[in-house]
Image 1 (cartoon, rainbow, N blue to C red):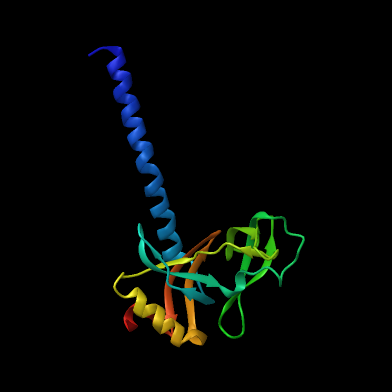
Image 2: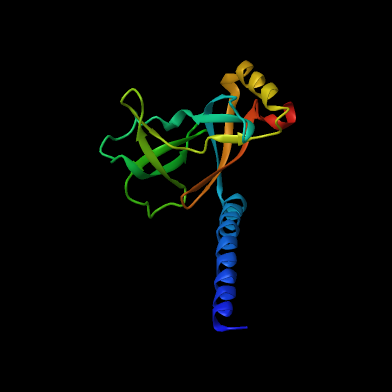
Length: 176
């Protein structure tokens, strides 16, 4: 075996390792959030789209994501939002800043964008995947119980992961 073949093998092995590092890191950090993150409930708006590559899923939108209620001095683009729990048990974004907060781990690193009507909106996790055969029934159930629907999320150090979609305090997967 010559020197060129050895370099190709080493390059191949390095490429394979790099390909595995990213998904392993993503899975590891998401599991850390799920295991030790703080849990919050957010009120939502939802509908049931279909994507031929992803199948059926519920596309959810946090009611708190509109920025009309928050300071306008935050620049468009990357931002950090602090999350606190209100008296009603639901979470809300208490502060929006372009600077990372140092005093809490209950914040979400996100992006704020202009909307079609000139307002601004924060990007939040938006997809709740479930059994494709149940998603239409879940959408109908959601529409019938729109006032009592919410999502639970886990938050830790800038990451937010949806844990479940609930209607009347029951996980929607158990209702359909």
